[in-house]
Image (cartoon, rainbow, N blue to C red; front, side):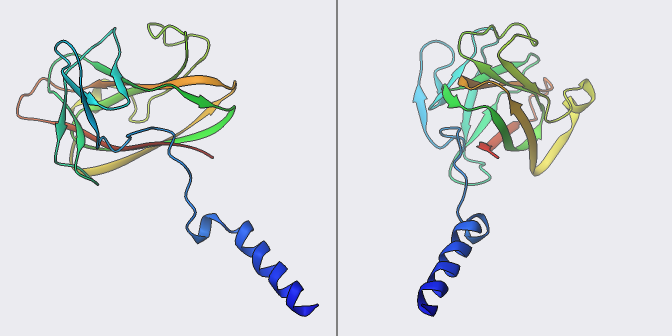
Length: 190
């Protein structure tokens, strides 16, 4: 009897404390480390796999070997306009999600939208979209220079289950001597 009780207590402890024992949450962003790349048509001839440029603000994205982890990071070219990139669609349940990414160089991830399939990306207040500005989203932040990798974390509440993608808008200076890198993008359900 004592042996069964002892086993029950140990198993219960392990199940209740799974996070602290090294079980990790699943990253909902496929290829968030920007390790895999694909050829595309037009001027955007190379993109991270599982990502697409958004038609309203296409841009050139370059694979960089100056990665925080792994072999590659996303390099956003230094030009004077904003650029957008979006993930593949994913199923999200209503709930709270944590979005994390690492940035290096000069620039701003102006906003992140979680957009329900079929909603317009031209309106920041469209129904079925959730909008955050993890770096502040202000003009003053454009010139912030990150000499080393710096982590940003935001929490977002999705109120309606559905199929969504994550869209990111980048802004940066037009200084050709500067660079803007993004790596280790993740989104996990809390």
